Image 1 (spheres, rainbow, N blue to C red):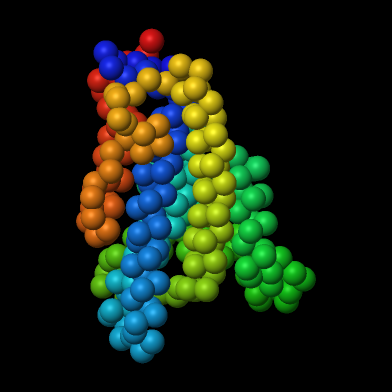
Image 2 (tube, rainbow, N blue to C red):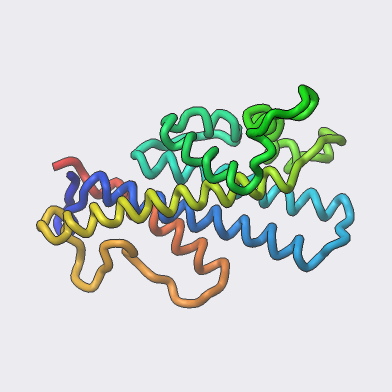
Length: 218
């Protein structure tokens, strides 16, 4: 448990706020990708690269959100490393939900068809590769695989967020969490307006609230 003169919070509160922050940002980048693809069915290669960067970055943020939910902070862009560093229970949940969307990756298949793990390794450096595509010049990207993976992670993240919120609300009722009057336990601040800028701004504020230096160990 941590506190400041006007704030008393728990590790679960930190995890809930940090998870919500990064999850929100990941969902926004995924939404940017999806909206662009739906509006432009015939996309030129140089424009498609920008959309792929958004999807790859969304995956990175979504995986990092899961780490925040268990009190960990992961660095780097490698999607495979971010995935395998998750607890096996969370990996299993992701694969379970992914299998409901694209079951072919878990069915018996010819050797030339990659498995889930092999596909994840193939896309491990997608963000860096496609962000600097002018330096690489070639590469493959499976939108279907990455989109299904992103939505699978989101489902797992929301389930974990709901569980954390339930714990946090109980802690608040027990007086283990004290926040300034008028502040929501689950949403420390709300920036008005539906714009993406405001949503990202709110997300960064969440992260700041969760890790601000002014809150010290009790």
